[in-house]
Amino acid sequence: MDKKAYLVLEDGTVFEGYAFGAEKESVGELVFTTGMCGYIETLTDESYFGQIVLQTFPMIGNYGIIPEDFEGECSVKGYAVREKCDNPSNFRCEKTLDDFLKEKGVPGIYGIDTRAVTKIIREHGVMNAIICYEVPEDLSDVKNYRIENAVKGVTTGEKQVYTAENGKFNVALLDYGAKRNIIRELVKRGCTVTVYPADTSAEDILAASPDGVMLSNGPGDPAENIEEINELKKLAGRLPMFGICLGHQLLALALGAKTEKLKYGHRGANQPARETGGDRTYITSQNHGYAVVSDSVSRGTVSYVNANDGTCEGIDYPDLKAFSVQFHPEASSGPHDTAFLFDRFIRLMEEK
Image 1 (cartoon, rainbow, N blue to C red):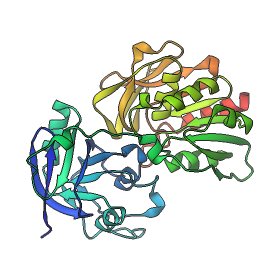
Image 2 (spheres, one colour):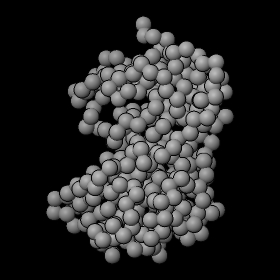
Image 3 (cartoon, one colour):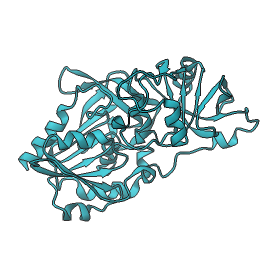
Image 4 (cartoon, helix red, strand yellow):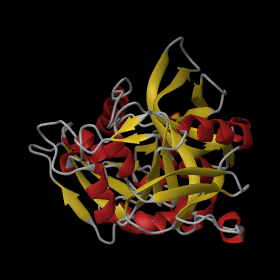
């Protein structure tokens, strides 16, 4: 039997389970994700920087760890599951979930009632927590924890180029914590992608003469990225632009809108996004704790809303040849319902 471990919420609620992964204590913002598959992509999605991730699906690790499916670097602060699988079955598996977490220095806890934890977060809202081996008497460090310098913690340190065979377009991708499948989706559509650090100036981007600009997903409070927002003010309208998740929020902030923190966010591969100018609802992959305030959007038009809570899921800026979405059209893992948005971005570059 593994060592006893505890998940202690900032309000003092204690869940007793067993330790796996790295043997260390860790404090983070506790969030839940409802995906029934894709734990590899979740663990390597840099949008989870600074967070302890709880999976609502009961068994995790059943197909092991497959490096080819990584979306970025593992940036989570901890991992909480109901049941872990120590004997994965998949021909592509290279190691177990336990081995992966040990390798990345991430503590895990299993054997807890993940449904009960999820209900608390849904009713109370996102709160901080600690994975530990003795219940602390003083929770002040847990209560005071804040995610800081999130984008700086995940962005690339230097420019990188991904070349497409018979490439037709050159795309500048601003890396706020980009998932690798964004690059794959662009490359397979004939785009040579140059990945830039998040703090790259608008002047440097324009000097490279790209055909379009991609704004990636990423972690943290969007309003904290003042430098990045100021550079987007200079870029908006100069080139076709497509923003995803944090990129969507930063573009909205650059164009005068506001953002707000959601009670418990949207995380999972089954989030419904409804067209405002049509009658279709798409099932989408999402991972965010902040949203653009729809009523604050003045420059563009809200194009999608969340069918559950009505929050903003997309904005069109036709006069700027730009658009953005809160959800993840690159999926990984699924669903692939909104991959057509990459084709829309290609058409904008063709029209340029």
